[in-house]
Length: 462
Image (cartoon, rainbow, N blue to C red; front, side, top):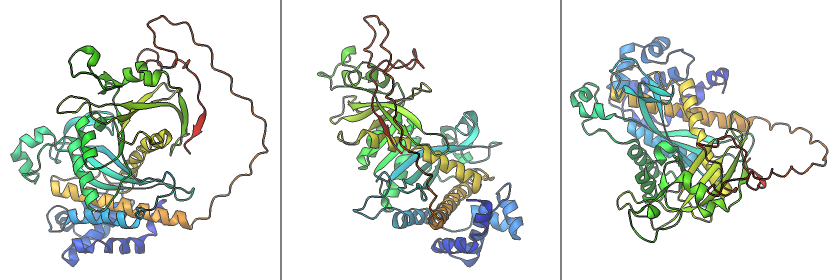
């Protein structure tokens, strides 16, 4: 949406905020709620309490107290946000949404660089926003994506939940936590456990996910993968290349090398289920750049139970995707049934990029990273209010797109005869110990080398 469109949404914003008035017990709190939300949607360069209060003509102290100390129910507001999405934006039971025909939950984290050591949870840790270790805070999020089926509407996406990742150093220093008003029962938890709790909350508020997607930072933990299955969720997520599994169930439980689990990069290179399988090419659309073509293979494997270290009773999808242009490899695991269409799995897996779009939007438009304060309660309320306003913008964008006339389709050129693609070059001579030519080149040793395996029919994931 343009700044002019946002500026003209005053009446719509008032009506939207009125839906959450039950979270505030006093009229003055409702007034501060509206003031702060309008400030986050404004064009102020810094959307912290002081400039928001001064621009609205209210006292800075009153807005500070509203955010960090006054008695209003931000958890209920988060629940109402999720219930609104479930009631107004999720497909009705028994119906399939347009487009892919699925709803997708997006699990990821984001970070914000901070100065000093007073912001709750701040320490030197990996900061994805700058791609290196930095003094920052990290928050874990659950997003929602309903892929669109029309050119005007596109995907409907929103953030559902937010939790602060509390580092171990903070958790061990309870006086420091008390100074930041961090509750005594809030301790260090791995990000995967935080994500599982968020999924559990969303399910309790009536949301349904056909798939959950995540990156290898979460996919590397088998306990997380099996935990999602325990919640009855179907998932597909990226895993690191050294993630271990079995291409077939071993005959014996033994520590001998031949019965040990294998890294996925070696499974796709040496397993018969992969080397005798032809590559399938799919065109994956992207939101801000040109579509990318990925060559794909998929087969069933067995995971290691995190407690017994034995292979799981059921099998899982292992999918390898190779970008011939960049030489990049991605490895995905999924607990979807073995009969699931490979193209559907791939298109759902690459929908994870929508959470990056959500993070960009919430940081650029509603001041998600602008919080300045030493109160855990104030920080959490700020994050939840930013998510609320992102939902408001998503709803208004959907309505504007629905009102816009459909784009004119360009005239189709007359059909022309097309030449068949040239056959692949014959494979070069290989030593006897080299893998079969139908296996992918080793990402570490042969990156960028042309594949010598048989070509596959091009599909479109438009």
